[in-house]
Image 1 (spheres, helix red, strand yellow):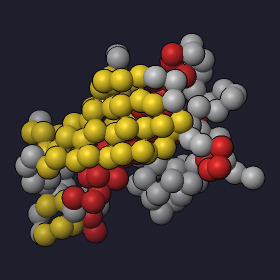
Image 2 (image 1 turned 120 degrees about the vertical axis):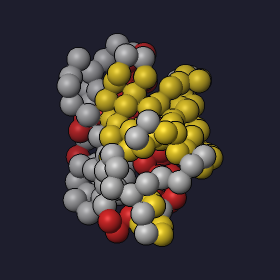
Image 3 (image 1 turned 90 degrees about the horizontal axis):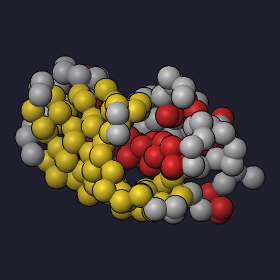
Length: 156
């Protein structure tokens, strides 16, 4: 298995996402990895990700959950087929639904840790529960319902 981040295994024509696309140099560049049967990512918000001084904008937290969720969905799909991520045919997932519960203010200037666990894994639909923690305190929980990317979204 590769030590690359899930997002580094996406084909170039599917690597433009603002949250995790390696080809989007203005984006977050989120990188997700396996940690046993769970997935993990770390991200340190920039000062411009501020809601009010000292605290992170909730939309950033939502976008991190979103991208970690879809990346995790792709990873578990490849794992289920016992294939290396990035091998053909591409298994890419997109968000069908996103639900976020903010549990505590997310502090600015602290590395965030995202942990993903799988509650449903089917061929075309995967549900990932994600926690976002700062300094060991869970700030947000999210559920990503990811579906296999429809053919209408494939690059022409």
